[in-house]
Length: 93
Image 1 (cartoon, helix red, strand yellow):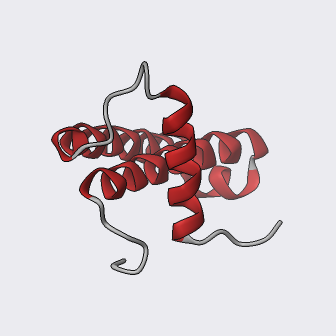
Image 2 (cartoon, helix red, strand yellow; image 1 turned 30 degrees about the horizontal axis):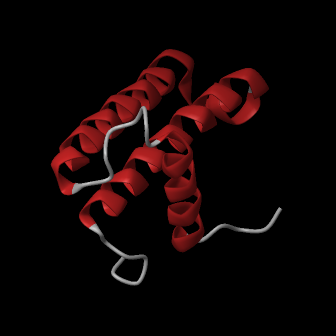
């Protein structure tokens, strides 16, 4: 699999939002705070895995690693949502 760049992630997230825009909050600055708060919640979930399972499990236990990577992906998703809601481009990052 090839590496993914920020603009790719932004396009994927925008397309996902487009598919769910009737049930998800608008992609406007007024909702950026919510995205940021959800991101912080996901960071907390990552920290909980780190505390409860430890570094060795994240590196060596496939189930723990999968769960950790899933939570880290959620962090990225909400980070990208925040950028999109404020109209921040990949070039600005």
